[in-house]
Image (cartoon, rainbow, N blue to C red; front, side):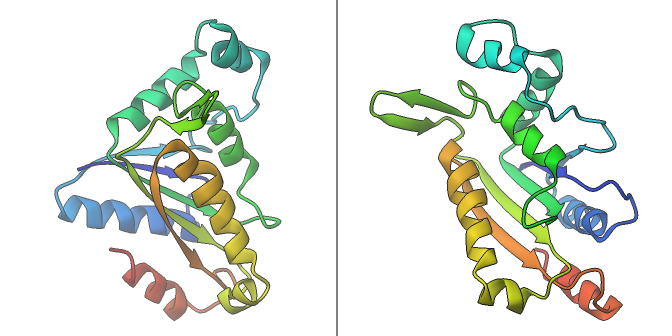
Length: 186
């Protein structure tokens, strides 16, 4: 299996990175080919600009930085996306990546009969880290809101079958809690 890991955290010592390392380790054990996109490390430009719109809707040339990421997504059978939730959302750099890379004509097509996902046959697993305990996000339906946006609104819209896992109380929780989370990664 060709496995692409996309992650967003500015601290290379973060729990987000620990998840990436564990996913990479387990994937290698299964014999998967792995490539990793570190959005902060690569200093990805998250700003959707006029060249992006001209490419998507006006037949202009694709921005160079976008082409390499679309080639990686095309290459992959499975995507793993890992990020912390900040202010009830993904980090802006990841949102910008989705805006610019999962673009019209590549990830989906709008037709007179509605949208068509162009990335069918791919799967994804999203890991979202929060400092809020999971029980609170479940009680307030924040997890359901995230699933609706991430799975239905983004990846399944593009044809990707998606699963989401939440790890709560990450920063203020114990090392044992974080280790237990890592142990659940398959």
